[in-house]
Image 1 (spheres, protein in one colour):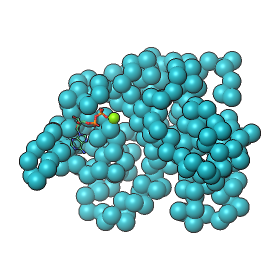
Image 2 (cartoon, helix red, strand yellow; image 1 turned 180 degrees about the vertical axis):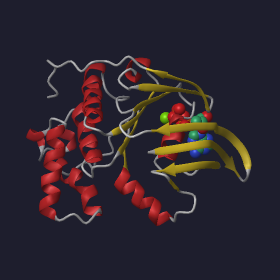
Image 3 (cartoon, protein in one colour; image 1 turned 90 degrees about the vertical axis):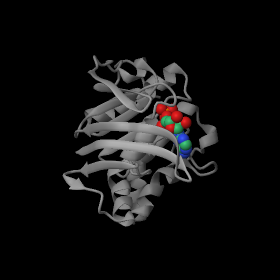
Image 4 (cartoon, protein in one colour; image 1 turned 60 degrees about the horizontal axis):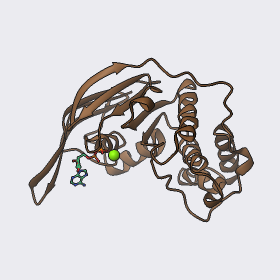
Length: 237
Ligand SMILES: Nc1ncnc2c1ncn2[C@@H]1O[C@H](COP(=O)(O)OP(=O)(O)O)[C@@H](O)[C@H]1O
Ligand SMILES: [Mg+2]
């Protein structure tokens, strides 16, 4: 699906090198993958995620999505890929404070000119998938942290992207609530979504099929994981 080769990312100011955040990083993401990107704070994880999602452009690289080289695409075409192919989930849920959650989940569809009725149907369906069917008209401040993150996940899946990028999505949650969120990612992956999960925790990385360890902007190793089973008896409510 997505091939990134020879990524170098330098943060500079007035052409003075501040930090080489990524150094010759190669990454292939196949359809149906569930990859954890692991590493200590400052190792370059978020930089890499922003590059995968085209939020940031590296100093040099090759980026090939579905066999197409991106280097010659316009900003407009890149934005389209972002809107249709890829969605993000962040540590802080980035919800709008006073809006009912169904409206927040409908919003990405409005950018795609989906008609109102279909927006409502698809947002309801997405919120059902993350176990929030009873909270459609609640506002973020009426929800727990875990529930808010599930709204962010519903908002991420409502456009039906093929790739979901999650940067420390459980970083603000206690471990039990975090597990519930990770179980949702596991289910989404079982349903065919490709997921890249960024974490500094080895335990969380075990939810992914394989892990990539990054340190000081370099890929240290790649490994297969023995995966955590979803605890069937656990309710996501
Ligand atoms: N906008 C920026 N300007 C300068 N340096 C940055 C910027 N963003 C990140 N860095 C540096 O790049 C390195 C990697 O950062 P980051 O990708 O955020 O790491 P992680 O997500 O693994 O904690 C760090 O040393 C960080 O200080
Ligand atoms: Mg980070």
